[in-house]
Length: 460
Image 1 (cartoon, one colour):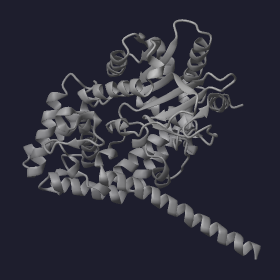
Image 2 (cartoon, rainbow, N blue to C red; image 1 turned 180 degrees about the vertical axis):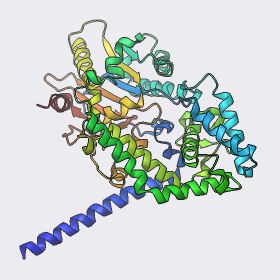
Image 3 (tube, rainbow, N blue to C red; image 1 turned 135 degrees about the horizontal axis):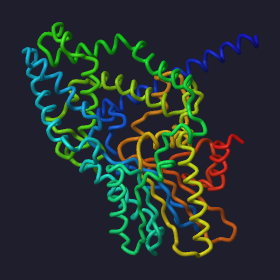
Image 4 (cartoon, rainbow, N blue to C red; image 1 turned 120 degrees about the horizontal axis):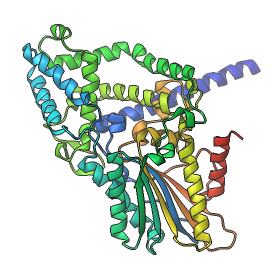
């Protein structure tokens, strides 16, 4: 009898788990069906402007310090061939008279993008600049107690122009709101050891060659498992663009063109000339002339997103196949958060000058993503061995959009012995940290969070 009930319970748990996976996967499909631009993964335009107002602090507490790491804002694509290679493929087909009317329109869009991107690859776009001005303005309006009496802001950026300008735009908004602020900013190779650490010799848990190969094999398995679906996407794309789908295969690599067009379609939301509403709208609307998403119906866009979601997780998340080690690449960055907070809070407590009120850091998505996983913000610490299970719980468009950021806002009470509190924010939205207890909704004791992170970093 006990054995029977044990088996029955196992079956119930299994079906409940499958139901949860299907439900979460359906949510990502619903999200992308409602707003296909979310399928763009790391090209998704920042949505922090639509975040709800933060929960009020417990009685007697006032904000006193903020620490952040932010990705640069929306940018042009980086690699020269990301625009040009797709354009060459379309012109090759055109020279053989193989383009449909829609294919001719797509070729014209690619011609335009090759032209306007000349000399700007990887640079911040106009919308990217607006994103960080908006982040700075909201910092100023939400936490005026931090800045209104002046104080020192320490800001550091990687020496990449899109990151530097992102820093400058955010600081511009803060200075405009509070002219008395003392701002000291820099962008130097000297700070890369923590701002963008990609050096294996400086990582405590750098992936071994075996772990890296295992991760690559896992990522490649997605294409094997979904070969039929991907082939169907290729066929639909070829039918839309080319008059002779059999003949065009001899001159155009359709899978490569698919991936290139999907990236270009996704990154159109980075440009004011290609969208309506700019950075502040809840979702970007791409101008009809530049919109390539008709080439990727919602189900196709969802599959290509799930493929990218899985690949990003495998290489930067707590992927068990790789020993769940990848997020530890940001060990030095997380230690920077801890050390700077303790130092600045002590400076304030002791009444020393200059009074440090903010530590702002600017870099890249390959740091924001593993940092959020290492900190275990919200569901970022989730561990999965299946792309569907992952998509049900861990969605990259909620983590590392353009201008994505991690903010820690600190609060102090005048009451003797009262603990320092901290509010963690991911893209300006309140998030939990692992399973740690909250003092009040959205608020943790700094000592609790710090101890959790230090234990994770040291393995003790």
